[in-house]
Amino acid sequence: MQHDKQWILIPWIAGLLIALICYDTKSILAQGPSIRDQTVNWIWPSSGVITDLFGTRRGVHKGIDIASDFGSPIYAVDEGIVSKSYYSKSYGNVVFIKHNNNFETVYAHLKSREVAEGKSVKQGEIIGRMGNTGDSSGVHLHFEVHQSEWTYDKHNAINPVLALGDIGVGAKVFANTNRVVEVSGRTQIEAHNGQENSQSTVPTQTQAMVHIVKQGDTLSTIAQRYGTSVRNLLSINGLMNEHKIFINQKITIKPAQSNRYVVREGDTLSAIAYRTRTPLAELKSWNHLASDKIIPKQVLIVR
Ligand SMILES: [Zn+2]
Image (cartoon, rainbow, N blue to C red; front, top):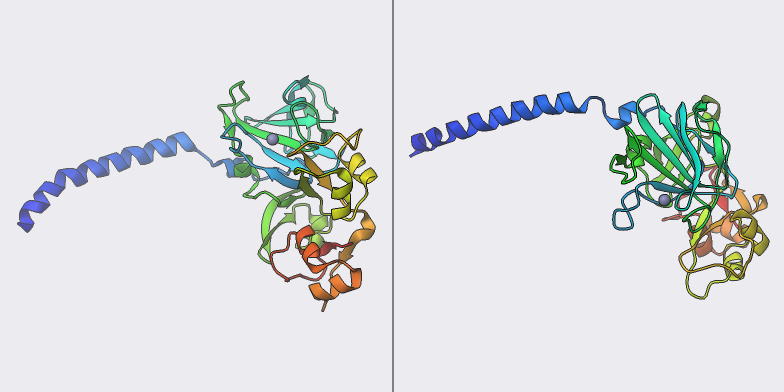
C-alpha cells in the first residue's frame, strides 16, 4: 500500500518541481529590482497628514492624498524632466515628472505650478504649491506614481507607499524625509537629511489635522472645537466664504505656534492638561494619542 502511494506521487512531484523551476526563472527574469529598491532615495513630495490612500473610492483612487497648508511647497520626489504641466478639470493644476528610472510621478490640485514642460528638475526642487484646484474637496496634494508612464486609464499606477514606505491615514509625513520609523507605537518619520537627525524621533513641526465636515458643522463650531479662529481656517484652507462649506469637505486645522507645548522630562499628560487648561480628552484627540504615553521633546497641540 505504502509502495503504491509512492509510485503515484512521483509524477506529481516531478511536475511540481518543473513548475517551480519555470516559475522561479520567469519571476527572476521578469521582476528585476523591487520598486522600493529603485525608489529608495525618494523623498515625500510634501509635508502634511495622509488623508487618503491608494485604491480607495471603489478602487478608482489611484494615488495618495497629503493635506497641509494652502500654498505649502510641493517637491519633486526625485530628479527628472517635467513631462507635463497644465490645468485639467479633474487634476486642476498638475505637474508630471518623468524620472530617469522610468517612473512617472503626478502632483495634482496645485494652487500654482512653478515649472514648465521640458524643464529638468532636481530632487527636492519646488515644482508648485499645495492648493484645491480641479475636482478636489479641500486643500491637499494628490500624488500618483506610474511605472513606465502615465496613461489615461492609469493602468500603470502603483501604490505610492510601495515607493515611499508603508503608512496609514492620519500619519504625518515630512518632505525631505523618506524613512518611516516606529516611535511609542505611533508612526513617525525619521529625518532623511543629516542636519535634521537631532529631530529624528520627535515630531517638531506643527501637527496639522484634518476635520471632515459633518452635518451641522459651521466653520465657527469647527474653529471653536480645535481652539483656532475662523479667519485662520479660511486662510489655511484657501476659502473665500465661511458659509460655503459642505459635508465631507476636508478642512485642515493648524493651531497657532503659541498653542504648542514641548514635552519635558518628567511631564505627564494629565499635568500638561492641567497646566495648559486643555481637557485631557481633547489633548488626546487633537494629538492622535491612543494612550497617555508621551516622550520628552514631543510637541503637543494644546489650548
Ligand atoms: Zn487623491
